[in-house]
Amino acid sequence: MAVRSAHGRGRFWSSDTGIDGENPVEIDELDLIVIDALPSHVWYQDMVDFAEGISDRAAGERLGASLQGRGAFRRFKNEVYEHHPELISVWQAMRDARARVRAVQWLADEGLVDQEAAQRFTSDNPEPALP
Image (cartoon, rainbow, N blue to C red; front, top):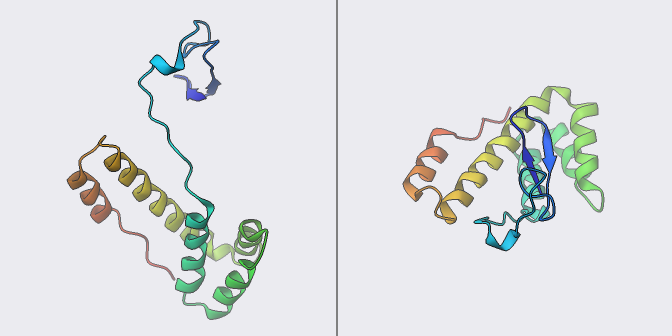
């Protein structure tokens, strides 16, 4: 597991070294919530939606083609960064906006924030318009 120290540096810990890096703890005794990674198809769909949503049809087709088969994540990134640098910031903005909404929805699903607050966050933080 990793936590951030006050200075922003990552710090790894285990039951042997405890949260403070020195004092052992029993992990089962801590009040922790497991955060499971989202399946890759969720992130893949973001790339598909981006490729289909941009108005530049040629760029969209190239991005769509990059998503075919194994290695799609790497090819998509390479296509954006190497051939369409004008799309980097909007791709990052869309990807980050979706990630934030998913994170807030997870918090709501876990009962850590109420549904109304999660819905308000989603309404107040729409995805950016695609060019």
